[in-house]
Length: 609
Image (cartoon, rainbow, N blue to C red; front, side, top):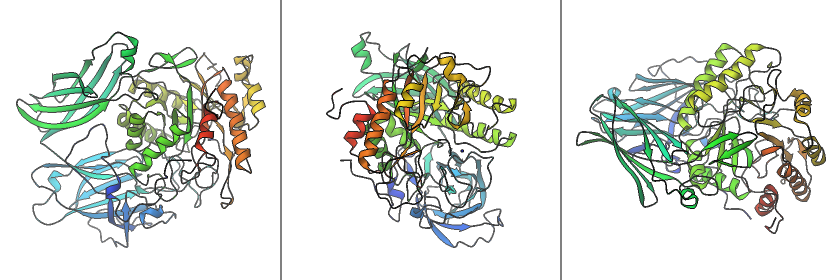
């Protein structure tokens, strides 16, 4: 988004005092049974002057906080939105069996974290949106409590770190929202053997009717390892193979029985209309000894570009996306519960969309799990920094690489977007270094994942890109229709300046026939409660009837514009001062879901075309 120059039961917006029971297994594609959530009550302290450096310091534990909610979130029990560059957490670890290897996992800590167990430093991590793990076995003591301490440093004024929509001003303004400091995704323990499966990557190979499986192990044993892989489609066993690891890793292709007939083939393909998942089981062995046993899932699907169309499973696919910020009023970037994440996926589908563009946020893996299982496409976008420097770019590259590694195996993820609207690279038209950054991230992303399209810079000023994304918030449907009409010459369109005063493609990068997607438009502000002031949006409606009429006209235009391979409407729900959602902040629709769905799909409200 550019800054200004009858529904299903709504999920709760506040958790109970203990949040431990609200979150399912946090890593849905590498599941073990023996794990313990550490969500719930922790001791907490602000350290605004950054006086303390290690767990042995005499920290005054002045608060209690409900993890995984950030201290800015009311649901954390603190709800302090001020500037706090450093925070501390402490809790004891119960029911640990000394003698097993114990892994400590963090879903995300914003921004730089240091972790101690029993005063021993066990982990350091930088990057506010990606996970990290520590093997804490050697830090455990035989008797007495195990004490876990976390220090999180997150300078609210630092614009050179990937921060997405987190505001650098005290109060949210324009299109930016409250900050998120410290722990904001699930913390958990896991017991493993002396050697275990550390990483698992699935790659669908559509043309060969195969699934690529890469397994990397960690631990003491480095030879004599094998892994059994079984795949099921429902109750039908599709594959049962054994592979010997070379060192601590293996990469194999698993052939699926190709029925050869399209109807039978289609039963195995994943799409939003038919989200077929293949359940997986992996057993790591040393001879006859079982070292590890995990559950996973994968899917067979392809996404590619053919001329001016995006292809899903080898056929042209029209995108109907909605921009989703992924915030909740009381819990901010953290969902109130796993059910809330599922509910968001269900609501997007109920409103007629087949996908979401997760905006300026690396979403919780549990959201991707529900998108995989229920059938919803996801465009994944890197949260932006807001200044350009070697430090900012190195941070961006590191965190983006970790995000791609984390989410590579999710079939719902079909597009990667490293930059949005030239944020962090504001002088693309004049400075070669800024261009180099975008082009480098584009090629790096294509190297890390050759199976998905990449948008180098979404919205305007495109250079290296597989899809041409356009942001256009003109609220007049007639002007939009004329601007992108079928008889419009593409070279004329791309030579003109567009909203925001930005050219659509940089010099030297003319449109080469890539698919064109209207990746932001609409933004109709309608505050049904009329209680929030001031509110913000691109276009305003004063009644539900006017809101419905304008939404329907805009969606008719973009659905019927042959130039577009799809669209992304702004936006899914109201988010703080922004009231341009189809739903309010508590996920209640502003007009009936049936009306939204019919307009989204350009159908008559009776459900017939």
